[in-house]
Length: 324
Image 1 (cartoon, helix red, strand yellow):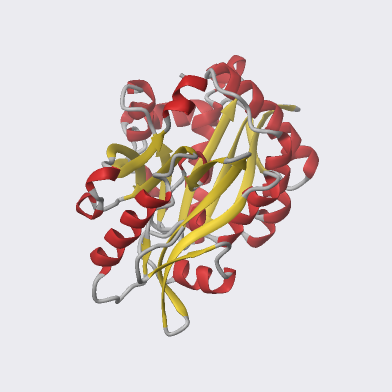
Image 2 (tube, one colour):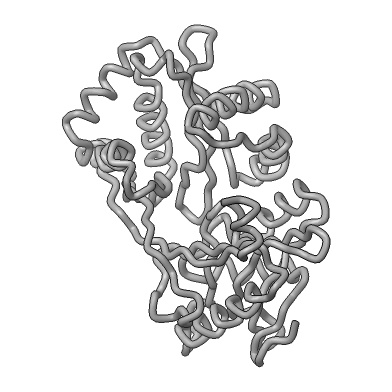
């Protein structure tokens, strides 16, 4: 497929030039990096990392990346997989950031508009609605973000009284907090992930993905697993990703029978205290369905506030018939 200048389809993009763009673009996240792309191309046989890019002086000054999976003549395009943030990036200081973002989104709309694209998705954190073309009309979503401070007590002062009470209860429950720094501990996390995802009505991701995150991202400081134990039993855990002073909670897991111990409150309080001491700037709790009142109340109880996400994409008629 050909795109109008200045857009070029890189398949794959050059990792060094791409990561230089990620480092220098507002709104970039761990989910934009070449390491995140490699995670999925390694996990999914035949998947490719592709990107629409704008080059100036031999460098990428703008781009939108995606993982493309092919099934015979058909394909899916996710920027990036599982609705993690993957909107357009434009290098800081460019004289026309909206113009480049608009060009990228118009190119993306053309990219996913073919008859053989079964499904496509894009999630733009704090995106610019005016940059979307008419044929790629976004819908509104949101995540919850908590600003951090070097003084944890300052962070904790924004907790609601009920959240502070539950944290005190958790502190009195005999729980222990630890980094999952061995494959055996990651597998304990995975067992809880399967239980948690099935309880929520979802399909668990394969264990190989979590082990790949442990081997490929954790050594680079981009991801970390934590566990909460009650005695010898693992009762809760989390998987966080890290980028430029921002920690993102990608998957919290817990054992339902242990909920009276408040392990989730214990875990989040421990994470926030650790991140504050380490100088992190923000904690992203992750997105919530608009009708999940209890989950939204839980996140806002920590002092987190909504930030917008714009979601766009398409599903072909064939995909809707196969997966109504």
